[in-house]
Amino acid sequence: MSTVTIKPYWPENQDGTTYYPVNHRLVKETQNAKIVDVFIEKATKEPPHTHQPHSVMFVDYDTPLTVRLVAEDGQEQIVFKKETAKRDELLVDHMDPEPYHYVENNQPMHHYFAVRVENPEGKQMPFEKGVNPQNRAPSDKPYALWTVRVPENCSLSLKTEDFEGVLVAGKNSAFKAHQLLFDNEAALSPFELRGEKRLSIWHLPHSNSFRVENRKNEAETLYFLPV
Image 1 (spheres, rainbow, N blue to C red):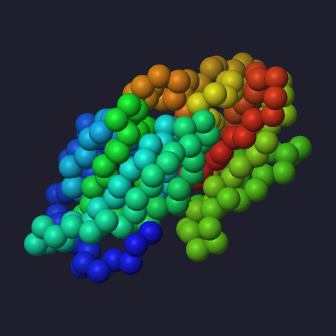
Image 2 (image 1 turned 180 degrees about the horizontal axis):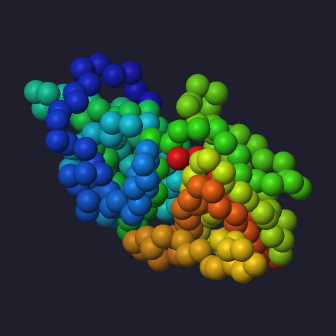
């Protein structure tokens, strides 16, 4: 990250999620948060925009990219540049509010895909007995990002009481989520995202019980973010 030498600019009516749905498609809005499907076409720049709230980014298809701040007078400054990318793993970035900027995908062969959860709040933990969740959020953030390793071919119980959240699994995982309804249960479908073989993300409404099963023959990581 470069030292910023231009004055950050916060124009009105330039929120990326609200005004640029080609790159920031809203898939779910809760009372406090937004879940956004992020896409930058190969060898393309997105339009300049802002992100007012803090966010957590789950990047499932990373690319080499360049981030430029844009000042009120149109002056630009590169504040971040990445020459290589890890496309086989899920990356998690904790993002502060972002002034007027744009991102350029420098990869000529691959699109950039991620899911952005805007304005997460709270540190509630939904996992019931038998697991050892870890909070992976920085200590100065107003939220927790709980992670847990689920053994192969095992199920995990979750319960949301006075909170809700999102559950995230990597693109090569084999998790299935179910909502428990009295003596029955119903499959809980992940959101439909653009592109193929994307990560899986579910919204867990408050005051409900859930069961998540790992159908893979190896342990997998699961993330929970209160919203």
